[in-house]
Image 1 (tube, rainbow, N blue to C red):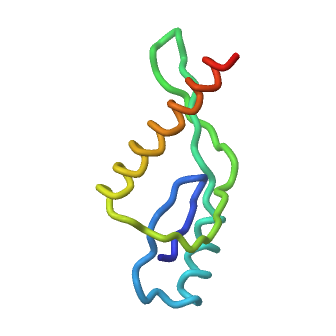
Image 2 (cartoon, rainbow, N blue to C red):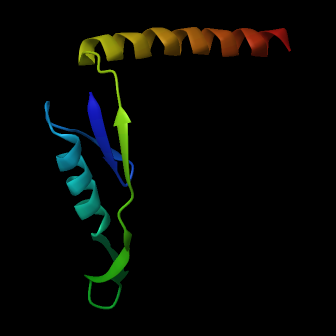
Length: 91
């Protein structure tokens, strides 16, 4: 699946989106500027200011089902935890 990463957030691109449309979208997004904020402790309001431009990357990602991803995460975490505990016990 084609994915666009905008400031480290991933979004799936629609199936069949043309290369030209993807390039146009990426170009438009890079022209955007993030808006950041700082808290004003005197009056309790946020002050907004222009941050930096958006970073854009395109990726191909293999998607699995949520259930499959959660099951693999649980299994590999248990394996990792067991390995770490064995290493500590061997010290």
